[in-house]
Length: 95
Image (cartoon, rainbow, N blue to C red; front, side):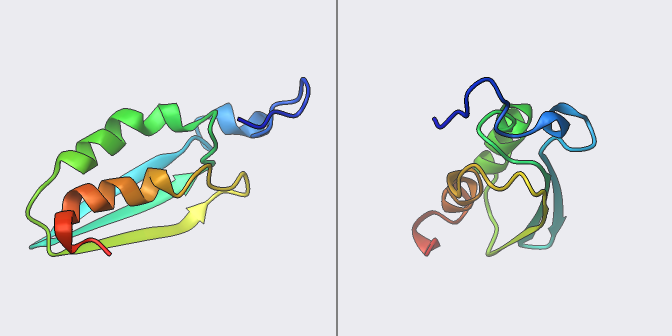
């Protein structure tokens, strides 16, 4: 992992509850929508690891919608955190 000296790479705001990574999940029929918000860095994703694993375990959806528009300026630590649950949900249909 890249670190920048003694400075926190994700910034001080990343630990604040208002800036922590969050995921809101909504179901409508056979569609699942996930809205991601907050600062997603390698130092903050642990806050939502359990939630993301619950999403991976869901079954029976034909449509998955990911809204990444509320991801903070801290950036995404890795597309893996968003793509892996979708691959699990969609199985062989995942692109």
